[in-house]
Image (cartoon, rainbow, N blue to C red; front, top):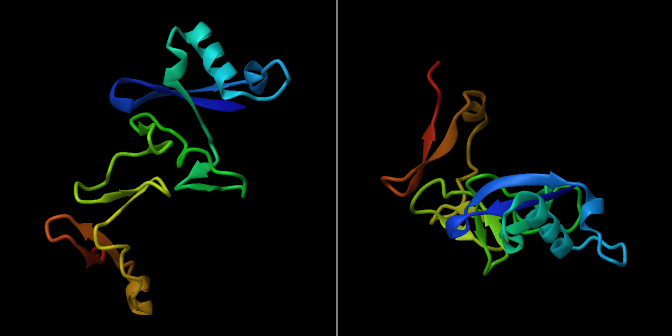
Length: 144
C-alpha cells in the first residue's frame, strides 16, 4: 500500500489516503510518485502536486523497520508539509520549541529532559515536564 497526504492551504495536511501500489506504476512497472499523484488527481479532483507521498513506517527521521525513511514523519491531519526541507512535521508542543529539520521533530530550546532520576523517583513515577513559563524542565510526581 502507498500513502499520500492531501495538502491544503499553507502546507497543512488535510487528509491522508491509501492506494494500491499498482496504481502508481509507470510504463516500466516501477513505482513512481508522479504516477500516483496523477491517479489521485483523476479520482479525487485535487491537483496532483498537492498529493505528497508519505511513509507509514517513518517517524522522527527514522524508518521503524530499518529501511530508508521518507520525509521525516508519516503525515497526519494537521501536520505541516515543508517543501523546502522535504519533511512532514506535527504542530509544535510549545511556542519556544525548535524544529530539527533532520529528524522532523521538535526539541526544547535547552535540550532534552535530564536523565538523572533516582530509582526511588522512577518507582514513584516522577518524570520531567517542560515548563514553558520558566523555559526549564521540572520534576513532577503524580499524587499518591
